[in-house]
Length: 115
Length: 108
Image (cartoon, rainbow over all chains, first blue to last red; front, side):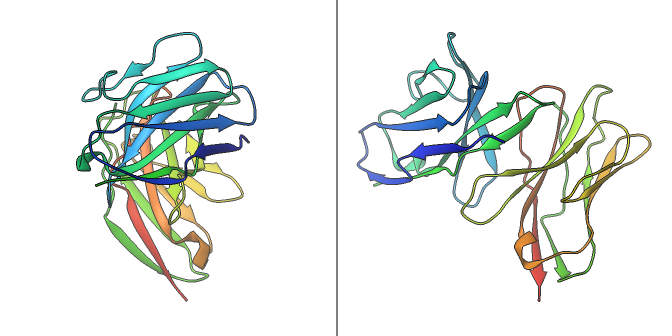
């Protein structure tokens, strides 16, 4: 299995600012994913990040608001830009375990509160 | 991707079996059925997956209806640690679209 860490684990931010969330994996993986979990809700897929290519965003999510980097096979970042209170959520990264089919491992999440 | 329907919540007694149902009537022939669970304050964790045949692993069993339009996750002996939200996800690609899930409460 893959071990995934995220930084920060939680943060409280002012509206209008940006926060970059880091996701580190202990082994090389091809596919990484970013999810959002709003309070009391299920998970919503934000985007898919492959190393060496632009992230693919789901409907309702745009690159200007959630820019993603994937510089190598063990690391990715998600930035939440120009934050508003509606962005208060848990943000989770996951990786596809290449032994598959399509088994994913999730990080512990980053709890973001925007005031 | 196929939409899934699960009961909002279920309750079980400790050490008894639990059957968690999932309806996925729009499933296509190549869609896998995945189950994940999310313990409080943690990211989701893989439980089991299947395509057509019933599956068993150390955590649970997955019973898939013959027409594949529904499935049931079976926890053979629920423990307090099994209290979580259980998600049934259907798809043939690695993008997971989570439904609302079933919150399982286990009573001692």
